[in-house]
Image (cartoon, rainbow, N blue to C red; front, top):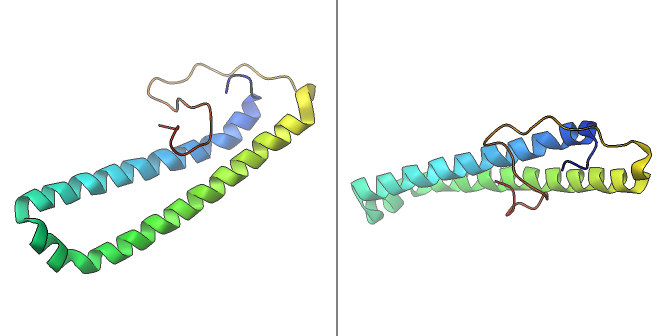
Length: 112
């Protein structure tokens, strides 16, 4: 990422932020579900709470579709920047904040 123009990095940053939000929500829901399973047991959670899983599944499917679209747009931005060549030299980026995005790709499995 340090080789990219700073303006391009700023345009890509919301993609990383959306992905981090998605992961945080997934982690929180998984933790909540596990706590509920431990407290109430498997059968009551799925029997009594099944209707709640349908909107959750839809919500996550919508979020995943938006992320996939963001990835495609990000890749298009990178392709466009690569096609335009080095006519705009890379502006040095400020140091990354500790704990910030540490990624070299827009692949969902690689960004944390």
